[in-house]
Every structure is written in structure tokens, then in C-alpha cells.
Length: 450
Image (cartoon, rainbow, N blue to C red; front, side, top):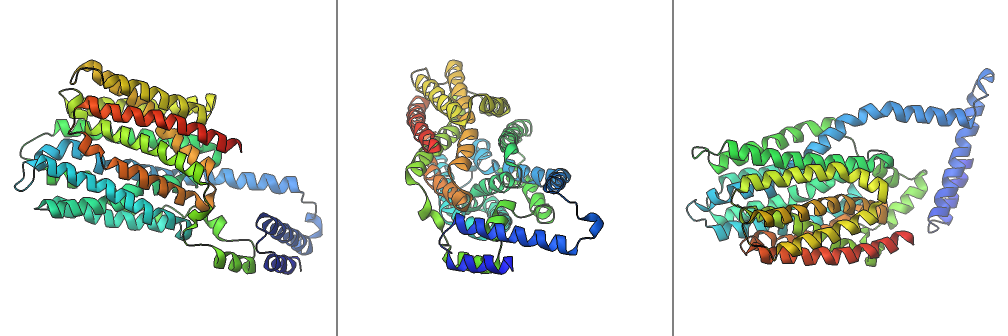
């Protein structure tokens, strides 16, 4: 009876949003209680709400160990997404020595990765709000690996650039899909820890790439073979993930209302791309923060060979800075809050990178200033993800992430080309972007208070 009433209420007031959902849940809960009392044995009719709550808490505690394997797999997937944008720092010169290639064409092809990243963020990420997180993640893994294989066999810059574009379209947003799926699969109290752990794994992978690339530097090992070897872990993950990772619980909960009739009305009125519901003041501020982080972070990486003579040591130091920063980001956020930490981080990055633009190129003092700027950008990279989760509801969250990525990755397409300029010029650009992002963080702060 109560379920029937709830469905009728949902049909009559299907535009009432939260009130309808509350009433639907109330009637459903009441009917479940009556059914329990009607079918229970007389000796067991002393069940209380407190006992029921304790049972639910026990179920959640029992599920915690089961979250470990999916979290590890998603974390490794996230970490491996740094390969397309990091490995090129060490293989670019060898690719440029191939017949038909040159340094400028290799940099231009790498820009196609970020253009593809932007296109994937625009077209794929908003669809996750409609079709879920898991199966798009698996599809992007598969297509991206095929494109990586094609890039290793490319004989002309045209084919190589097209393969790099497809890799950007799939493997670029893949890390964000893995991040979103992991964050929505763990309790909200663990989100800061999960973000820090993901970023630490990213840093460890960068250090590993820099170390191995220097140790195995051998003329007999072609860049094609080296690239294929670095994508083997992602192949293994693509084979293991379908059997160990489930769909996002938050997405499943949002996509399956408590009663069938209400669900059908909701599904009919739900837009395919629900980005029209976004607060665009918050969205524009988020875009600016993401752009400053992306352009500054990857721009410093591509300029590793110009900041000091040893690019392998430079990238290794950047990886160490990333690792230390991501490890200390969580306690900083816990003590001072996400907004304050992000505001301080962008301000610090702006100061360090603007100072870097006035220092002599190729000197260790310039490298030190760049590492300080990198440190603050790493902290901001942690906070921008957390603020996105706080500023946007679940039904538009991946759409907001996709839009932020579009702008950030389009501007990041200039990062490989900025590496061809003197580091003083590129660091000036990175510093000004960080300064603008500090102002945008204040807009996000006001949005959260509202």
C-alpha cells in the first residue's frame, strides 16, 4: 500500500525534486518496516532502529577489505596515464632522428595529444553521467592501447600525429575516469587520502620512467621498443580490471530511484548532457584553476632539458618533489582546509615562477625556483580535484570535470611548443596563470559558502 502511494505521489509531483524523493523513500521505508513486522517471528519482534544501524555499519566495515583491490587497480591505471605525456621527454630526440621527423614536428605531434585530450574531455566525460564510469573506462583503455601500438609502428609524422591524437582522446581522460570511479567508490571521509595516494602513485611512476630511461639508455634499444614496453602494465590492467572493479555506487544510486514509476519519469526527463544545470560562475573559476595547474605542471616537464643540462636528473627531481608534495598535501588540507591551501599554493607558484623568469637560463638557481613552483602546483593539483567534488553535485560532476578538462587541455597543447622558447619566457607565462588562478580560488570560496 505504501509503495503504491509513493509511486502515485511521484507521478503527480515528478517535478518536485527533493520533496518527491523524500516522500518516496519515506513510504518505501515504512512499507519495508511493516513487511518485516508482519513476517517476523514473535520472539524476534524486538528489533530496534539502533540495532539496524549497527548492522549496516558492520556491513560497511566488512566491505572495506573488498575495496582494496579495486582501489589498487584504479590507482595503477591512474598512474600509468602519465606515460604518454612523460615518456616523450626522453624519446623526443630519438624520434626526431627518424627519417621524415624533426624536432619541431615531434613537438607539434605532442600538441595533438592535448588537443585530443580536450576533445575527449568534451565528448566523453559528460556521457559518463549517463552511461556510468566502468565500461567507458574499459573502452578507453582498449582504444588507447591500440593507438599506442600504431604510434610505435608509425613511419611518417602524419600517422604518428594521428595516433597521438587518439591516445590523447582516450588515455588522456582515462586518468580522470579512474579518479572519479575510485573517489565515488570509497567513503567521503577517505577522499582526501585517496587523492593523495593517487598523486603519490603518479609521482612514483614519473620517477620510475626517468630512472629506467637513464639506466637503459642504449642506442640498440629503439624508441619504438621502449614505448611498447612502458605500455605493457596498462595492457595487464585492461585484462584484470573487468573482473575486479564494479560500477560507481554513487552513480548506481543516482540512476536507480526507489520506485519504478518515478524512475521512468526521471529517466525520460534526464538530459543526455546535463551541463545546462551547472553554475557557470563556479565553472569558469574551476576552468581557470585547472588550466593554470595543467599548463604550468606539464610546461615545466617539457622544459626539463632547458632548466639545467641533465634532463633525466631534472625529471627525477621533479618526481621527488611531486612525491613529497602529494604526501604532505593531506595534512595541510586537513589543518587549513581545501580553499586556503589552494589559494596559498597558487600564490606561491606565481611568486616562484615569476622569479624564475628573471634568473639566468640553465643555472641551478633557476632549476631550484622551478622546483619550488612545481611544488606549489602539485599541492594545487590535489585541491582542484577536491573542490570539484565539493562544488558540483554527482549528477553533473563528470560533466563539469569534462568541461574543465577541455579548456585546460586545449591550453596545454601549447606546453610542448613553449618548451622551444627560452625558459624565462615560458616561466613568465606559467607564473601569470598561477596568479590568475589564485584570484579564481576566491570565487570558488564564495561559491562554497553559498
